[in-house]
Length: 180
Ligand code: GTP
Ligand code: MG
Image (cartoon, rainbow, N blue to C red):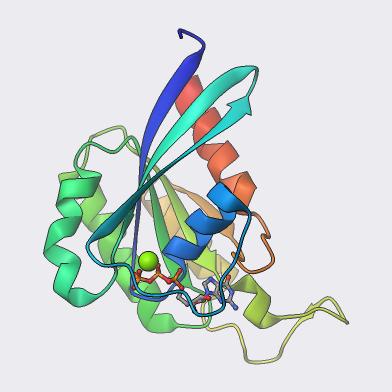
């Protein structure tokens, strides 16, 4: 129907940062402590309502393991939106995210909507005090924001485990694309 918009979205990022877990949380409101690595890529869909419009997300969840790196372009080539994911406790995953942001800028559709996501926020938060655990965070909010700004992306920290900010990421992407 004319009231439905499809959004092709791709997830990119180092192995084990939680790409599939973010998708599982968004699509099934579920979490698995020992989620198996993605092989190649997985395709999932999820509908939601934004500003009285039905949005159908068509999601390509890519594999982060290095042996699949040369497949990623097949999935981001036609994507309207990308989530570039890193783990806030893993500096190497942030360096990888920087590479993905650059590659998207050079190789993807010109007006692709990008969100930079620092996942596993729960690992740095002490739930009782509501404060960050000393030394647990390895990538600062400022570093994340700066990288996102450089590439014209939005920035979120999330937890697929607690569902912190997960829906917000997808809603933000949908609103941005509806405005374009
Ligand atoms: P590949 O498919 O290999 O690229 O990995 P992935 O990025 O899809 O990671 P996946 O979702 O499989 O998660 C890897 C591990 O991290 C799993 O054991 C998850 O349970 C765990 N995990 C994912 N997200 C979170 C999170 O927000 N918090 C915590 N504590 N663990 C998480
Ligand atoms: Mg995966």
